[in-house]
Length: 311
Image (cartoon, rainbow, N blue to C red):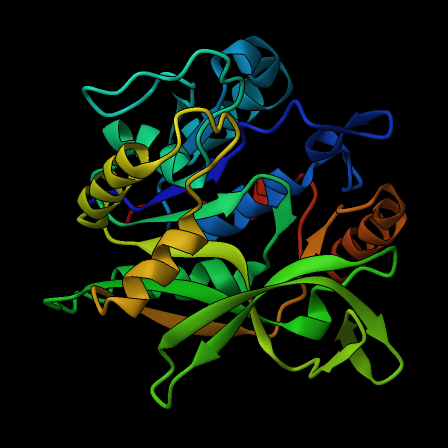
């Protein structure tokens, strides 16, 4: 059975400052953040990588990332695929409205990867560093073999203080968890900044030890049917003249939680999350990866410590 890592990379064309942030080298040998996520997933046991991209960036993607990663993965017995998130990639009977210029959000991004999915999978953002623990725990959860009548997902829960930027405010999904560690609600909170006492959002103090989602989701294959159903309902009930509306995975998961249709296990991690929300974040991220390399946490070249998968 395959356990896939689905990487949402359709936004690779989004520029910040003078370049594409997902392609900014952060490692000593020119590695980008995505390389580390792929490394950590393979190390944890994932044996398939699916990149969700736009067709118009396919050639540039393969030249900058895809062919290089595919070669590394082939040596390790890991399959790689590209799935294309396009405006007109819709359920049967639907057509994109005239004037629509952007894809339909993260639920659609997951659905376009469906043809390559034959087991449980994780979904991540292309430009976030999640740490080794999150992938290891997600893999173990997805392959636990436990059966349930309810769709059971998992989400990595990061300590809020480990996800903040010194360069400006950020948006985080604060996780509310029951006594058994299952998610009861995600509250999207904007403009969170670090303070001397921890953190605050719009002047309201926040506990820096709160758990937040950084959108690393572990999903059973059967949940694809639920996503397809939800996306169809979203298209049916929408306003046809709203050309920018999106169907977002965390929002839909919250809807399903309230309807008691799913359960989501929160897997706490003490690892630091890194990203480049702001251009000013880049030096700090590069320094963090330098320390990882100096301590031996990651080898150089990056994939040299991995053996071909037997999982």
